[in-house]
Length: 351
Image (cartoon, rainbow, N blue to C red):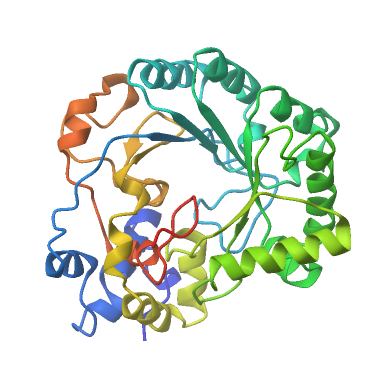
């Protein structure tokens, strides 16, 4: 069985520990083939990008919640915050390279003091779609956030909101006591200003993550269950449900190792590898930007400090679209999470 991360603290930095576990454990004795090996077997190595369509920008790791599965390790004590200058660089790159979607994430992105300026500036620059990944409870966390539904609606922001389950018990166990009730209130506030109403065209999506070391169920079935329960119990409407696999990094990896579930979970992911999901991986049309402006193939690689490959294409200040198109996408064994079963991306299943 894998040794705990804590036992290795004097040998590695936090990121090195994570990578050490991902490259060891179930893989170190050859019991499982690596993700690279799986790509080689289906002639997808090296993994190459398609056209760049989405800028996913992490504006800071500060959050009002501390969720057990969080791959960002976000929380109230995190101080990393993107500056307005870096935001401006992102907008200029998006506008000059015909990138149609700005996907804002965190932490709780709304806690960045320049968040509203960023959204308004992106809209003014002609960005076709702005997505905000909200934990919902931020809307009720402080009076200064209470008007966020109106702000989102005014700027026609697409809201992708986290809701682990349509019942209180499972949600609060994963995200903290009282989170479910606050989330329901926030969803009702979003509905009130027109979200998920066909006449307004304002999109409200829910994001579902499993509460433990297992793959999500069928996305279409989950969506029907969520729609039925939330409508019947709370008169809540939403557009789509995105089922996302928990990737074995950061806080969730710590949980897997501490609970001695890491090897079993990796075996599940590897056993469920789906070659058809590879073409739909989000790293093929998305670049992730961290709070300092560095670029990654996805936000999971961001947490492992795996910057995009190649010189001259690792920071927003030196953005080079042609270099990014030619790069090899960096992978590691956490990538099994995105290619397992029906696949997983920030837009839900992919196969």
